[in-house]
Image 1 (cartoon, rainbow, N blue to C red):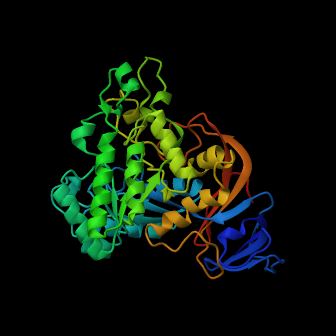
Image 2: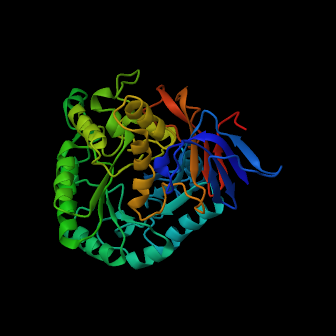
Image 3: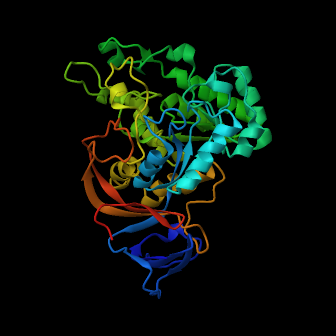
Amino acid sequence: MILIKNISTNEHFFNKEIKETKVNLLIKDGKVQTISREDISVNDETQIINGANLFLAPGLCDPQVHFREPGLEYKEDIESGSRAAAKGGFTHVISMPNTSPTADNFETVRFMKEKSEKLGICHVYPTGSVTKGLLGKTLTDFTSLKEAGAIALTDDGKGVQSDEIFKQAMINAKKVDLPILDHSEDESLSAGGCIHLGAISKKYGLKGVDANSEAVHVKRGCEMSLETGCHYHALHVSTAKSLEHLKEAKAMGAKVTFELSPHHLLICDEDIPERNDGSLDSNWKMNPPLRSKQDMLACQDALISGMADAIATDHAPHSPDEKKMEISKAPFGIIGLETAFSLIYTNFVKTGKLKLTECIDLMSFKAGKLFKLDIGRITEGADANLVLIDLDKEFVVDENFFASKSKNSPFIGQKLCGAIQYTICDGKISYQAQGKL
């Protein structure tokens, strides 16, 4: 058993009336047994966490992570990815299918699901690919993937280029009641670029990625969602034009949702630093790329206005050697699980642009709702998936901070506020800050 004593929280997270925001919470057999404003009696074997100066929230949920296993374990594996998630306060993550072999079959999806369940560090929900081998040509067996444990369907990492195949995918996904998560990229417009097409790409003589490469596929997805009734979810939205299409589709009643990522909210192409040799730092390279300042501000507006449906890290680990390569040759992707909450809290909650409850809902209740996961609330009898946060604690992100195998973050060196102190997954402490207890 675990007893969390005298911890601050917010009545917003409870499905019962709690008039005060200081509570005691008892965890037994993986469940929240008791929530009380009064003292709770326990035996000598109970593990006690002093919650004074900490904040209690539901465990967080990330709609988009890449855990690389099977096949690419030198970048990350399910265990190291789960530990990175737990350090970031996440108890639930949705894992993408761009593994090797691709999660386009029953066996690979089932392996991912069973391994994460055996580890018990974090709930890892696998997705199945829309097309075989992520090649965009032949649809997978959606029924089989769902039976294996896939919670959604996506070719993330690649955009499905054929309109005909994408429409049939949405028809088939509707039949099996799974959402399509869309990496929106028209490759005829992105054309092998490495950073956003704009003044910075021109200054450094780099091939740029046209912002329309994302927007045209978001528009396509919105239109096909209206036509088919399939739940269309736009991954890592990064442009103002994409947001316009999503807003219009939502107003028309389309079953469309979207996520924003901390990097697209907080940094733009103008911020990419130079290395000592005058080239751009590949740790700032991701897909979609960091966009213009105007796009970044549009993403901030979508977050602050309440239009966004979730925040996702798109945690994409790569080895140091890969990210040392010249930016046009280095792989796309950055890590983000360990820093996501603190980045949003520091830059939006502490500055008064977003309420703490809004931030946590976007990273728990609302994110889970995308996949019909009943999470994001703290109730007696429910699974004990919780995070305890020191909202006042400041820390500097350095290369030794990460639990991930990889260090490819553009936020190294930043001073952040809001440090995760404990993550509890199904009643077990899966992360504990050094020196606690």
